Image (cartoon, rainbow, N blue to C red; front, side, top):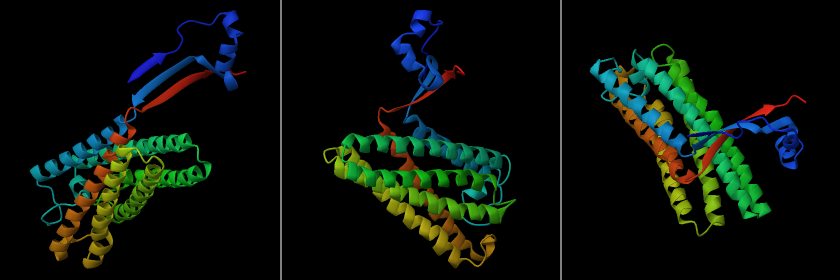
Length: 279
């Protein structure tokens, strides 16, 4: 991270009247007194990966060491490893923070794709890509907060509400993955000589197929096979099967989001704070 102050002294009267300074005061903003924070864009998918993996690893390890109840099945649902203290606090915080990182990644990816489309200069094809890109942005921003919500409303205190958030999060994030992959596939057709982009499309496509497959087994198929969604004792085998497919679904999602590390490359996110002169 770099922090730069673009000006350390007050401008002279001559500088205030200069064309350069007038441009910096565009729309009432004094750009000469701005502070800029610059981050490598690939920091954010890495932060999401580290936050999520460390949170899950801690909760699973802690729940097994402390022998907390996981419903009597052979392998726990991820949510059930975070329903008792201290895991519940870490799980809620970690998943909420991960959802924030995902939102940032989704926005940065939208900007990256928008830039790549505009560089092409083909207006008709660019419009199609931009519409898909906006749809991906909406799906990503809608899905991400539900990851934090399903973690905070845990399976011990609010199991029904937790399940509702799960049923919103997975379809929304799957839609985002497929739409975003479609956008990248569209870019690959435009930039035919970009081998890295082609590899990214192939990797994303396989992650999407695997994510859809395991989520289908976990939610619609798995839920239809159990007699009780909340009491695991009646269907130990099926609930264990659902827990395993849940882990595999999440693993596919982790791989998908991690692919943005390679997509962002040397891009940087810059945040600028400017002063308004009030005129």
